[in-house]
Length: 112
Image: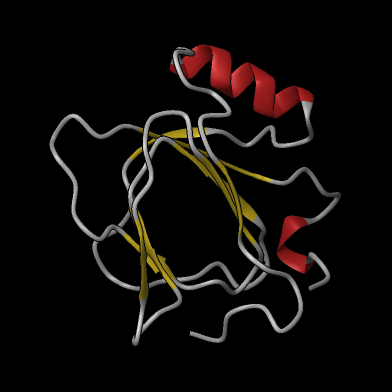
């Protein structure tokens, strides 16, 4: 994975603890992250080369091969700069992720 050359992964613990997925999506949209989705995270390493991504309520492995495991809990928020490798490092069927991409005029050409 290339990972971002300058921007770090940000983690805020319990930022949305106790909130419903709808409340999380609304809060993200108000803060400039309108492209929300619900689901999981792929179990293989991948990255989004041109889009910054925010993930809420997940356990995720960051960095690509030679990975760093990061245990996270309900309501935790991770902001992944464009190019940051990540995958689902293991989860229960109860896992629900609310993810979103930053609102920019053309997210395919997001400067990194």
